[in-house]
Length: 233
Ligand code: ADP
Ligand code: MG
Image (cartoon, rainbow, N blue to C red):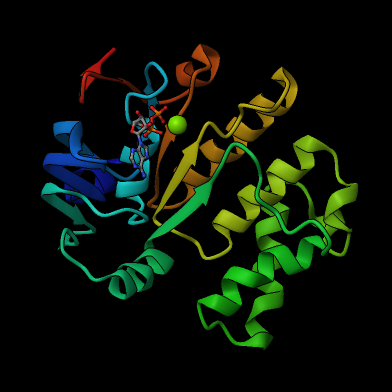
């Protein structure tokens, strides 16, 4: 990161004493027990830890896909702890991109249509969509696959389409839940290269959940989620 960036950087996201409870029947279980975290532009965070500890829950809260129970969440300087669902959705469209372990692509459609969907949803005009879609696909070296049927792509290509879809709105922060979980070593490292390029080119950051130590080693910071708290590894 250059000096101009680091001198002026406010965190992209900041959580203070973040708590999350799940109610299961009569019982309430506290999954996240007062997490504090700041993520600045240029950072790539890996969150590791055993299954069932709340990694996905934490990621979904940061991505404004799930409400928090307590504490404060500031995203791009704005307190988003108590937004309504529709306010969250509006904020999320400008702010966040998501990549999941399984690509969640629409199978019986083309690559183009998969990327067009979030743009339509965000209200981007038709004549602007083309260039946004093509440039997002070029970022992941899939410029030649624009009109390809999604279900004829390889697993690695499908994951790259899902990355392009997450980037098409040029989010400030990319959230990924085990994005390389179903990829072999070669595709996994290609995907990591795309993430690196995205984070270093823009004033962007990334938070990913991973079980893969090789993937974590390519991040700028590695944290462990255990017993409801985050620890530096
Ligand atoms: P991880 O991603 O670390 O495996 P999760 O965030 O998926 O963990 O889940 C953490 C815990 O919360 C698990 O015990 C899970 O069963 C529970 N949980 C997840 N979602 C819900 C929900 N919607 N309602 C109740 N319990 C949930
Ligand atoms: Mg999970």
